[in-house]
Length: 71
Image (cartoon, rainbow, N blue to C red; front, side, top):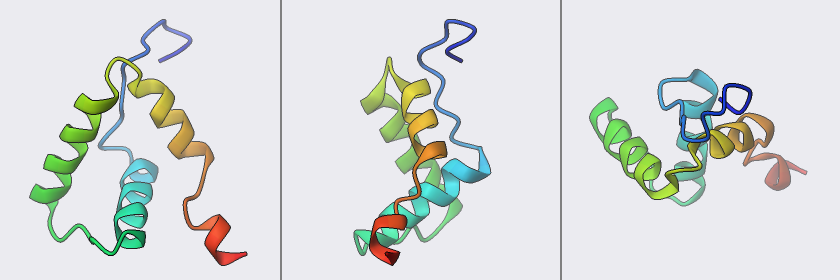
């Protein structure tokens, strides 16, 4: 991604990314109900953050959205 000079790689199939997106939607009280709706949401997010998808991937890997709530 960054090391390969690819700034727009948003890994929507990565397990951590899936879990983070599910957690964020749960937090917003809009849970993701199906695989199909997850794909649509992930595609929309990917389009919105383009050309910086790799940076969002790293941010989601690094930050747990529930950490600040649990503390």
